[in-house]
Length: 143
Image (tube, rainbow, N blue to C red):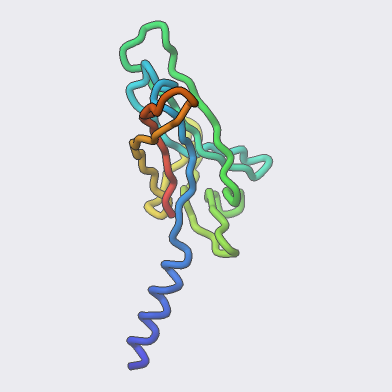
């Protein structure tokens, strides 16, 4: 009975930490010419800062260059002592990525504790003249 209680409490505490952060949310017409959205973590070791980097990769449009957008996530930081990208959620530290320096440069390797998902959905928008359907894309970081 004691073990069952312990398992139940652990399960509830993990569910309390589970959550998501919307990293990007925009209409698809803003993404014309984009084939994919790459999601990575970026860091500034000197300032202890971390962010999510979205790279919009051109699909077919030769005039469209790949672009990058940095998104600041509340509670996300870089710990230089442990070389980890951590997300602070209600005082709990979730390790989202580990950082290693090699002779080729710095690599930021994501852990399985902070995953990205891309969702496609539609909304109805009444513009005052008609109701139109707008297709949207959302990037979410789950933890």
